[in-house]
Length: 167
Image (cartoon, rainbow, N blue to C red; front, side, top):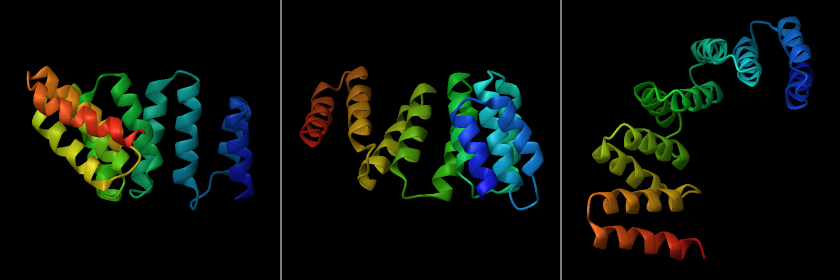
């Protein structure tokens, strides 16, 4: 594990060439899924999103329960406005950890961007019910959705609840 910490430290310090070399040096069967995720992060920092995406996908294929490459793929897909892929990635995250309100928030947000308000509301509701750190953002987003659909009374209820929780 010390080898992996050295890689992480080099990534954090933006010594990306060194980190990439260490990834190649320390790669083995047990940590290959981690190494591929690290390579994805490195290539993302180097603004090579195509390679980053390939390494995140490979990392996920090697360990289907490892959440980090999926979280990274979500960000890439949102930036690329590839909303269908972002939704698919988030659905996988929600299956891996159905108690993580942030994953349901992100899934709802991707549905909202994709103009599927019913699925957005459904997933914002799941996020709110999980009562985690994304609850206030979800309440505000629900309020905004209702406001956009000319349902001011409903939207105010969500905005006021979010306001009360943020105090």
